[in-house]
Image (cartoon, rainbow, N blue to C red; front, top):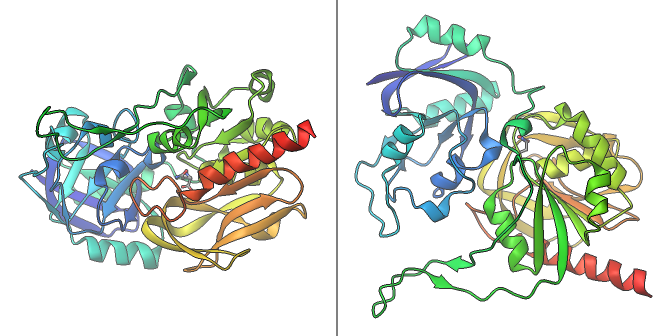
Amino acid sequence: MKAILALEDGRTFEGESFGHTGTTTGEACFNTSMTGYQEVITDPSYRGQIVTMTYPLIGNYGIAPEDSESKGPHVRGFVIGELCKRASNWRSNQALEDYFAEHNIIGIEGIDTRALTKHLRSAGAMRACLTTELSTEEAIKAAQDAPSMEGSDFVKEVSTEDGYLWEEESRQWTIPNASTGQVGNYIELPPVRHKIVAYDFGVKHNILRSLRQNGFEVEVVNSRTSAEDVLAKNPDGIFLSNGPGDPAALDYIHAEVKKLIGKKPIFGICLGHQILTHAFGGKTFKLKFGHRGGNQPVKDLRTGRISITSQNHGFATDQETLPEDIEVTHINLNDNTCEGIRHKKYPIFSVQYHPEAAPGPNDAAYFFKEFADLIDATKAQTNA
Ligand SMILES: NC(=O)CC[C@H](N)C(=O)O
């Protein structure tokens, strides 16, 4: 069916819908990863966004249940150049189109995603409307009437209702075993060394998996859990997850995290890093068009080492607002924005990017081990 993507500044694109039909609005953004569309679609941090993939052909390996980063899709709409009609992958059990139809997600193909991306890069992030039923004028109006990403709290929509213990399935996929027919190859998990509590602001499964694979037992809790309740569990450390929306709109979370500073080792990723920024008394701001993809260069200022990282964020820490006690440890080499911080006195650090990848490079995977080492050092100090 004919579909229209309209931006709030009046620019429009026409294409064909796939999956669901109807009308949806959200913030238009682009992701430059060459693979990993399923991880992007199911990453809760994309809540409220209409995502464009710059890679020209999408859907070629279908959907495989184990590759989802959460229980279902979170994007508000999906914009691509060309949809591959026939998925080819032995692990896939569904075509992207059918997955979208099942979950009521509107996709649009046949879009000049290069022109759209260049426009967003020069004009900045914008609200958008994706529709199969409105006229062009109506669609532009709907984009203009959509709520802004700034000030939006989407964490309350994606956090787990009840707490749970992460059960690691430790599966590393390989080709099917020819003699047993079994698919998947199970890796041995290390014994549990540390028990931590993870705040779920929209956590990706591969973060929980990476933590477990580094010797953590992970108890996941709702985003509204009080600092008192977390400390009552007496964890060895606390993890602050990624998540959607504007980090500045989460005062009720900043206040709880503030109470945890100096009490336990803390590690934060993406939204977790931005929440720590606020808890330290710093501020975040909206980037012009965000960092989303698998090739973002980050420099570790302490070692000079450069990592190619997986990223997905539209806001960033304002370095000028950080108090004396906080050191900027990492910067993005494309625009020099803050990508990592560390407390000078307490065992607390965070990164703006995604060491768990999924999708993207694994250069930064060492942070999970660093967190384990930091807890070891803290325990040794307390026992000394
Ligand atoms: N991946 C994330 O945690 C994203 C954090 C935040 N929602 C941002 O866009 O900056």
